[in-house]
Length: 507
Image 1 (cartoon, rainbow, N blue to C red):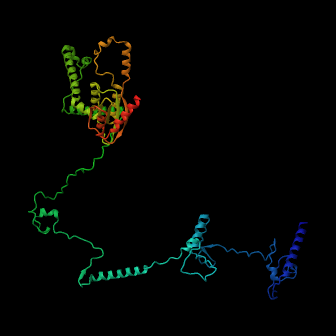
Image 2: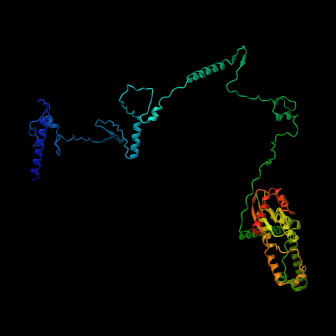
């Protein structure tokens, strides 16, 4: 059944082809043309309804492949190689083969395509009309409309005149350099300098540093050995290198911080080295041997026979040696002890702080500065900690201003705010004997009021340099006089701030 169905379909196709070819007027093929090969059973010329052989050969039936439609089979030739492995033909000649490189990766293919496009001429873009085209104007195809409007560039007036004038001047200058002279209106010759003058000093016959040595000689050829002073010799004199006065020496390397265990180990090793040196000197006979360290506990073990024969003399000898050791220990400590002057200098260096860049300022408002004891404490501690400033004593407000480093400021804050007792510092213990008969309640009220008195820190900050040379107290009769003291240093706002704080506290 399948074969019959396929045969019916083939007949329908043949009929359709025959009807199509009947409508087309094809030229007749001459009879002298060689016969076409057979197209297989059922595909002869008769089956095409009497059409020509050329038309029949041009037809490629859909779904069918006859013998005529098949490509010619390529005959493979045998591969022949010579002794060196080169390909040869049948006559024995070497065949030169060129291996074509083919890019397989996309990247290499794109690169090869770009290289090929470089050597290809750009495609000629046809223009619709060249009638109104000016070839002197080059306008890119992809430029915008605004860019096309700017294509025309007009020459400014005098451009080529300036170029011609510059060219003439260049020719004239070259001619003048050749002649080396120029004739002016008066006819006098003027020397022309070269385009790039180079000034070269003539070499002197004698250098200036040799004039004193050579004396009256006019050149080095007239030099005589007798004229040379004895200080001149063949040795090279190297002057001492001095440090420049404007540059500071680089800071010394910071010492390495060692642990306590490492420091003990270093001391122990140094002592062992000294002991070995002493033993070497003793063994060489250059130093006396060290006496044994005698004590009452070991004298019998060290001085056996002598201690048995005369124990009293041995005990006396041991006690004398112990006394000498104790005295040597005291003398060694006394030699290392600092004197009073050295102690003061050490304490001064310890408390000294660098305030050249910045100094700390602290302002205190105190209850009362009439006590000599309190003023002495403030003055003595301020001088000890290198503090400068001023203390104002007045009926309106008592102010203490201190300037210095951070350590001194911290110490003075503790003294003024905590250590000083501001209640009746100058009153002796028996000054109020008559007041013992007063009521206990009045005494309790006075003590409670006195304990509440204390100083207060108004402000603290930093300034670039100190305003006072030292610390001193000054008594002012009025508010204007106190403000004038600060105004002389440009610090009247210190007084205003303390005064405002007192007014706010009382209100």
